[in-house]
Length: 259
Image (cartoon, rainbow, N blue to C red; front, side, top):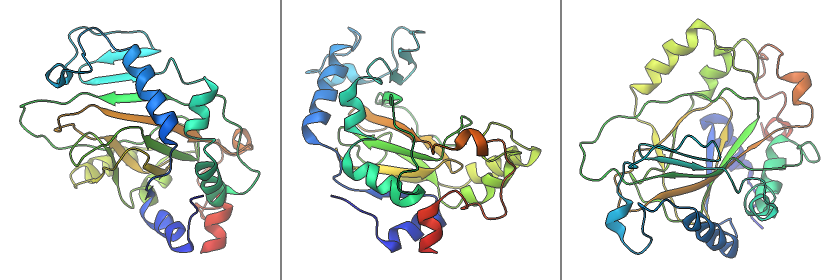
């Protein structure tokens, strides 16, 4: 089982993210890919790579299978038990999340966000990426790749150390209540190059809820396929409206112990 070393916990504290390799179950990843392709629009042919190049011909507003431009957020499977076993309840993923937030402190998952895909861009000029911070209340995000994601292949991108600024750019710890400083800091970080967290099928990326991040642009020849989940502590309703703490790691028992 994968675990976090003290050095990895300290890296997460300082940088706001951490990549762990070869964590997810190959059989569940294969099943996830099969189910994704069963739901794919007719535009995409699994055995014809040239059809994978975006954008989508038709926009789909269905929230459970939202498609627009190069993005497809397939949420329909998010509440199925095998999807929960694939990511948050994978024994290694759960154990490592508890190492950061505290054993017995996590809320049991009832669904994941879904399978989020980015189509290849094709022959288009490259453009810079800008970061943002998610607004819904949670503590620790995790992205799991169910297929290989090469460099510049739409992988999860982070702006290291940005959580140390963005945490204090909100009126509360976990809610969407940005101060005026947030947009200023976001513009500043977006001018810098983010880190492309590319990887292989089975790799995961942990990230702090206030770290600047983005879905990278996909200049590869394959579809970026990732599963996302947001870990929440059981007491989040009591802490999410509190002002940012002077010690931003107060709610992270494992990070506090490793300091």
